[in-house]
Length: 222
Image 1 (cartoon, rainbow, N blue to C red):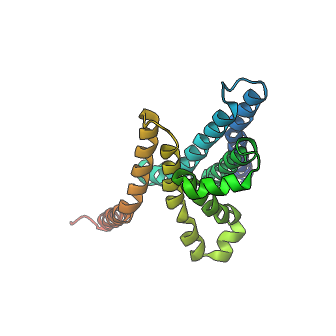
Image 2: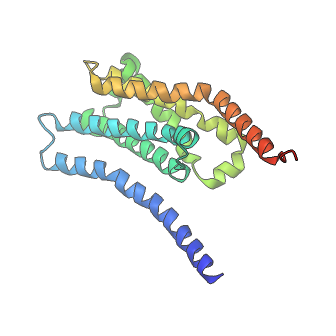
Image 3: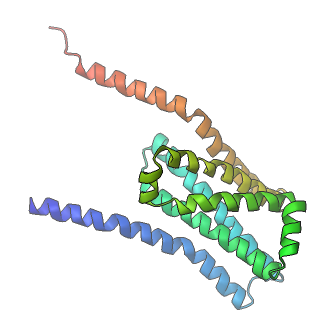
C-alpha cells in the first residue's frame, strides 16, 4: 500500500504545480512585451503595438478556454483542471490591454475614453466584454461554485458572448481583414457553433454508451 500512497501524493503535487506553471508561462508574453517597450523595441508606435499585442493574447486565452470542452468531448483530452487558469489569464490580459489604452494611450483622459466608448463600436464591444468578464473572474473560486450552484453555470455562460464581443473588437479595430483576423473569426464561430450542437452530440454519445453496456451485459445464447 505504501507505493500506492506515494504515487497518489506525487500526482496530487504535480497537478496544482502544473496549473501554477501555466500561469507563469501565460504571463511571460506580457512581461516580454513590457521589456521590449521599455527598451524602445516595439516599433514606431510602441504604445499601440503593446496595446494590440496584449489584446491578441487576451483573445487567445479566451478562445483556448472554450477549446477545453470540445477537446474532452471529441478527442478525449481532459484539460479541465487548466480551464480556470486559461480564463483568468484571458481576464488579466484584457485588464492589461485596457490599462495600456487608458493610461498610456489616452493618458487618463476619461472624457476621451467615454467618447470612444460611445462613438466607436469596436471599443464599445471591447468595454462590454471587459465588464462582463469581471463577475466571471470574481466567481472563479471553488467557494463561488459551491455557493452559486446552478447560477454559477448560468453566469459563466457569458463567456460565449464575451468571446464573440472580443472577436468583433479585434476584427473591427483593424483597417484590413487579413488572414490573421479571419483565422480568429473562424475559430470563434466554430467554438460557439459547437456549443449549439453539443447537447445533441452528447445525447447520441450517451445513447451509444448505454447500448454498448446493454450489449455487453447480454449473455450469449447456449
